[in-house]
Image (tube, rainbow, N blue to C red; front, side, top):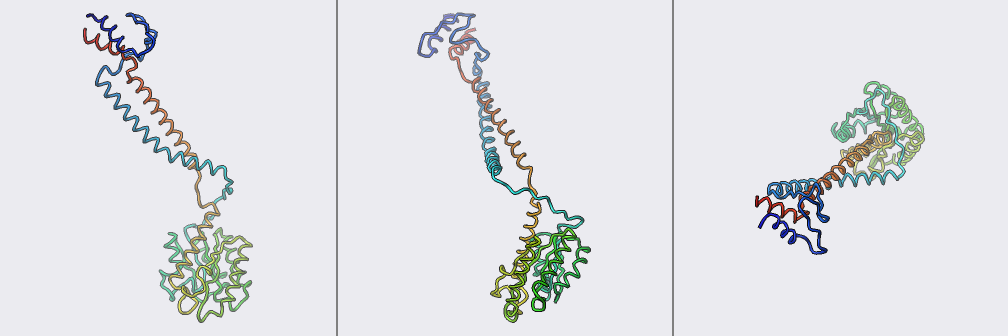
Length: 337
């Protein structure tokens, strides 16, 4: 049997059921199996078959992993698009600190700020605030000081330390001597000096009392309301420590006036939160730019996924035995030569 006979037999066996195809004569193209660049079988060689299967497998795994990797980016972009439809507050320009250092904080006050000898230096609220916020906190407290004393020393601390923030806690010694409005005016003067220096002032209410000092309670409650109302007129932040400490006395020393270590920690935490609030209100949060970066990365990743899918399709088509009859004829003819 010659090569031509083998071709006819194998063609008859390999053709699928259906209408009889035209018999292809040597040198001419068949209507069912036209000549094309993809007609030559790629798997005639075992090495080629294994190689293409390995390439397809690797590309498949790579495409799957990349698709999983871009899912979070896709979800993130979807979240950003939803946020874009929600009205957002206009961005606030960053606060101009001038030549002040925003990493320096000055705490002005009386013995409640000074702390010693009622608590150790490490237990004072300026020291605990420094540990909490990770910035330099200067303890400018002085035992027995009144609010007007604070007015007198403010310029010195502003020049000496150039702080970004000034904490103001006076009034515990004034409350039984002067009117609430007079005390509040002194506190506002300190805040105004800080503002003119391009520092950010944070005022404070007066700490509660108990025991032998309980007679000051009503005066302190009144002063605290005046402090909050007057500070709101000028837009100053107030660390409202009184309601956080409470009036049960558990955060006070036996003298009923000075906070204990736990009370100092609460004061530090309250000031810390107000400083963060000040930074958010003055554009300290930063941000921006991540939306564009996320979008560009998302686009690039999906282009790689699409390219990988196209490569899988192309190699799979090349590696598939589309024309079994031609493959059989080619193999048998090559074998009989």
